[in-house]
Length: 307
Ligand code: NCD
Image 1 (cartoon, rainbow, N blue to C red):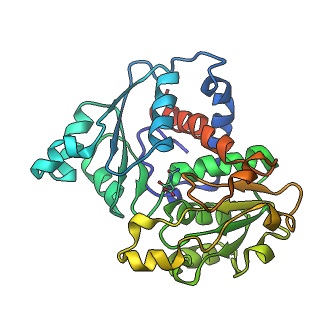
Image 2: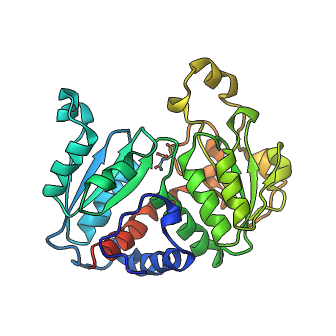
């Protein structure tokens, strides 16, 4: 695929071949991401980050990726400090920021915001999370992590556990895993099940997902356990959040029933859904997964900017 100048709004914008192309380039980028090799292919390029929601990993790894490749970054700390508070629309903000940069990375609480931004911007727009919608770059780094660890994605048994309703990472990931031929098992509290339209998409790809209630049962023969945080900020009613808070937790006793080579992933931040003692087991891959955000975003930026 010719990535030059393209937007990345939904993971469905990428074919299987395009996804593997990103993963291949990400592998080449790894020593640069670690600072072991120097490369200046983004020299002279400016990336703008527009984050209207909190972020640690996504924003910093985009910034690290750009700077390690010799590019520069523009961003605002708090959206409250911008003209948005004076009533400027997202469309106008985007039109301004594109004049100052070569590529825009947007995170926004509203589903569809990135698509809208891309309509108003001539410059490429990357969706870094739009409400409960999509988070395609997280999916690319999640796929990279599985591929790097297990060497294949096709046929891998993946359990997605947690808030599958509001969690955008699992919306993008479920689609991509189905596209790449993984087997999916979904485990969620009754009120936080995977939206119908995502399950339908997975089915259309010929991958009927298993829906299981008991996490212990689900992880028995799994290769990957992908855990998510309950997305507290997206609940219209705080009472509904309190009803499900703390309803699942991965700890050592639970893992006794799992495979020895089970890997546990999490997009982070974690709250209480993974016990800290799990961090010291060989299953815990979430911190390496977070590092992988750098080479994967390097790959994407260099492909899109044609560097
Ligand atoms: C996720 C997000 O923002 O959707 N975080 C991330 O980008 N790594 C997951 C979350 O906030 O729970």
